[in-house]
Length: 67
Image (cartoon, rainbow, N blue to C red; front, top):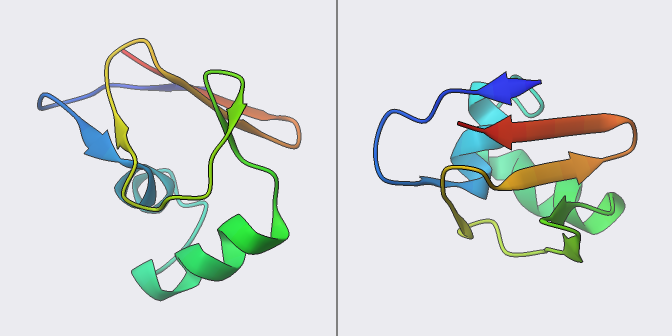
């Protein structure tokens, strides 16, 4: 899946909401605790992690590439 970045960056929480992975910001802590989320191949648990163009977020069989 590709996500077209509108500004300079987007936070991990905003990305997951925009892609309908989570429905509200309150779900992010549980989601990150219960799932192994990777940004560019490294485990990530910070909801405010800034994501930039060409970053790749992956979990389970889902892969989101920012462009």
